[in-house]
Length: 136
Image (cartoon, rainbow, N blue to C red; front, side, top):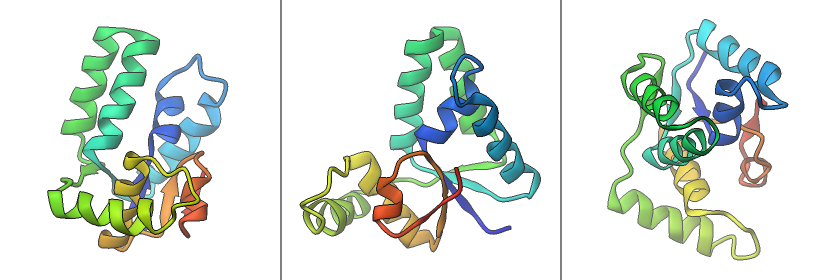
């Protein structure tokens, strides 16, 4: 299986048993991992997910998330260079001025484009608007 982008809106429910979407999200996450797909994400998504884990489950869960996310062999965090961020702003936020793409979304889209990733684990419809295939 080719690489799959991993967004907060799929990652967080996969990690949180109290989330109403936990079972489905965890199943899709595990299916991607079993298929040996590399789950690609950005530091923005890691930071966003970490902040949500902290709010929902506390500091120890936040620390465990970071250990697993940054050391796991099945997750690859792509560095967001200043050039990539500038392209994300220009090509996604400014070009799609009628959309409510966050900077995190735009950087995700730009990484996906740069890495030639078409599929994404997400519940965020902005990815479909940007032309990517949503798996969750």
